Length: 389
Image (cartoon, rainbow, N blue to C red; front, side, top):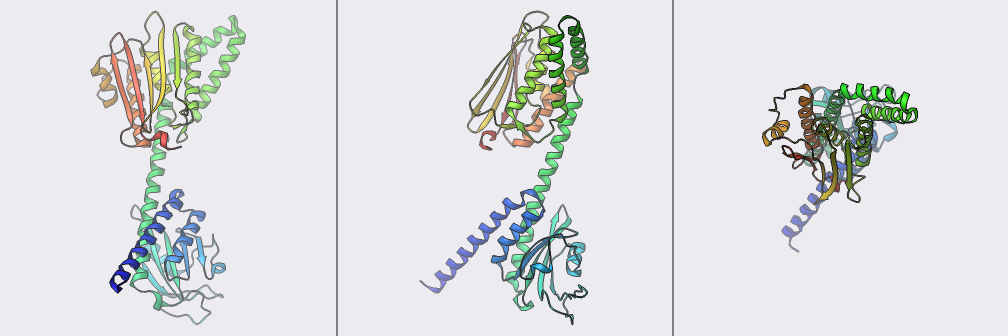
């Protein structure tokens, strides 16, 4: 093997190892800047450098320290070194020639201290999220001579990589908070007429059918408790369908069992798929509120199936229906409803569509097909949801 070929092979191996290490850090940074994740990252990075130790901090305390002199820097101990504070303040990489005194904890940058040496030299790089320094990663060396251009590039590269991962985590957290806010907004739209009508129905049954009144009161209590508590990121589809059934049980008590008939078909394995709360129940409620005729039975079918890794949830009724323009306007925000109730329909559908796109990305959303006098079908597509398991 020629020297040139051998050199190319070594560079290739080094690149593959670095990329593999970089990839492995992603799994640990999913929970943000927390001690366990930071410790795992430090253990991954230490063998990739000439450093004798690697540490990570937030803006206040040591989160992880792996390598020589670990006992001197316990997790949770406050940041006391000027080098780290300077990097946190200025947000730029610094090298240092550091001496820590066991008596005073003093440190000098690019200088020497007469007391006992703990870590002779190192690199401190900032971890930055949205232009704000949120922590540091530190590489300690036995001598400042070991800090060459390669070590500086490694420190800078991994700091930028971790900053990118932390930024992604921050965006995920923001998206989750936004999604929860949207759920709260949907909860706030609980139809007061449904509330009062249900209470009046239960009150009437206390005189004519006390046993059923007690059962309905329990269902009503569970329904509203679930409505107020279901703000998790995602819940099993079976739980969302159970909440939908509770809603229909309450409407059966009001209108009569013969006025609303619901049929549910869920493909095997789809019950455990995780979905955002309040994606099926509001669609079914819209059917009851707006599709029911003055007489006759409203049939509502809920079908759940997998389609090439996507999950499809279709809610179909045989009610009053609507024209194509009205159906389209409910999703694009151009609806000009005549009543507050109809306006709520549009808000609920757009809310569901926006949350599906946020949770599952491109290809997700809501599709409406309707025809006046024949009924409406609302299909939810959850892109890749079947592959999350």
